[in-house]
Figure 1 (spheres, one colour):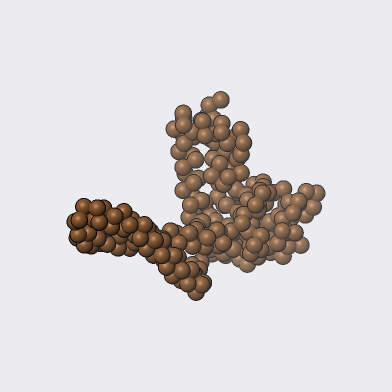
Figure 2: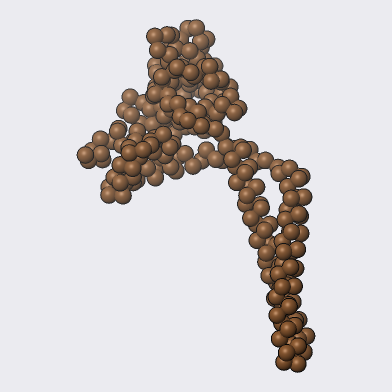
Length: 257
């Protein structure tokens, strides 16, 4: 199948591949096509670039004071280990000096300089490793645990909004993928589309490139799709439902944490 001849399907598969919701055999087939077809590879890279900016939304976290105590303890343990290695290395040198009658002072001093350099390098390597580990731990702690994800597109299947739900912070995070902006007297409003029920408002979107809305898993459970409508400035009450045109819509996918 020449997937490049079906741009809507290609864009949807590339978005799911970048999000990690394309799995198993489907993901392997997509990767094989990306290796062989430049348009498929370009679509995947485009979506990965769009989603890469989400990491910039996370606030900085100051390490706990206990971190520095742990670094100090690791350095001392490294220095103690180096000292034991020096003692073990010095014993054969003293034995050779006693056998040949050659003073070992010069060799000892040279070895001491080497050991000091090795100890310093080991300590620096330990600090770097600990800091890198702490940074990774901070990233894991602050990165949202995405439970639901949706890519909302217009009637031409052009992706315009990425929606994710973070259950740790009870937040919906929306990131603009297109350039659409409502007029000064209009607002975009997000709606849940439950099966067999009336649309339910999830909030009014701000004007920034990334928007966060308070939500709960109960608001999204058993909701197969989301939509965004164009409404009067400030939005409309939930019970009225959308009063303006629906600009973007798409399925809501639940993924395993």
